[in-house]
Image 1 (spheres, rainbow, N blue to C red):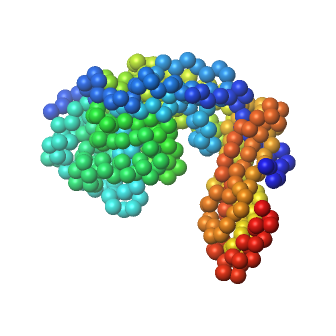
Image 2: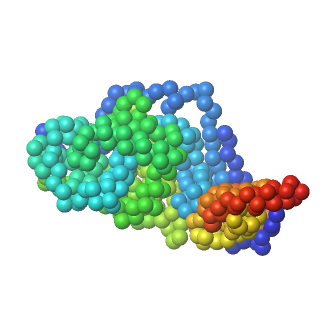
Image 3: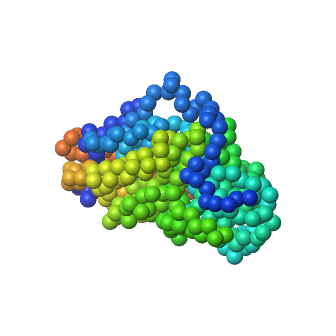
Length: 413
């Protein structure tokens, strides 16, 4: 039951018609990790799993890929996609996680950009895309980081993780723990480069979670993904993300390719106050992954708009609390709350709150107390639901408060 109906909000979301159905000598070629043709395991392409289609507005372009997803960065809304939860080999997109952990370690001061990293035989022998480091030489950490991000260097990635964790195997354990911490429940890593391996997989939806965390947590390092070229050892290599040249609003992120994974691209672009993230996995060619990613982004910016509903800490309701030191707690949103809507539907939105029944102490800040419901009045359709959260702690009261409130709660119910 809606306990309060707000005035029409300056917010937005509803995508009309939306429905969810179910020793080296030259630069490495685009074949980043030439590999066996089939290393996929059953979850990747299981025909018994029904196709999941996300289409929140008409006009979604036709995309030739195993899986794709378009997401609004600020609202988290999935705007379009096919099979975003399908487990697929990620190829060099794996290096987004490798880099994410590097940024964590740089922030903690455990490694420094000026560190000199000794190149091991394993790093030197890495196949596929390379930065072309030399065996036994020391290379500055910052150069290796750029070589991994801009040139997608497998040799750079291995050298970095050996410097940080002692071995690739130890670092992979950290990658899988970090994936779990980020809620990437359909991701499992076997190496730091994306070289094909059994049980090395992720999903478009999990990639978006990682990219969202990367942009949010490390905006200063995110800038590296927009650099178009990098030179090392007298070899200049270009960033393989072709959209950096085609669209000035695109500022990242990462390509990937193996024979078994196909051509993959994770891209992000920002126009005015709106940032979109697109993931295309398993395209048929380098050109196709760029073209489909570009079409997805153009569709998103042409069709949708983003609005902030409430600022961080906004109080939307006061909830009755039983058996606590206080009888009420302010409820609202912890962080900024955004919504994505099809253009022109902003004025049709109305917000309401549904409080949970029988809220007992103790309560911690961030506990769910109910649901914020956004409705398109004209269509009579709920277009967004998000948790209503406690904005303060409420410790448990004493025995007398528990007794009195227990009796009152009984009759109130």
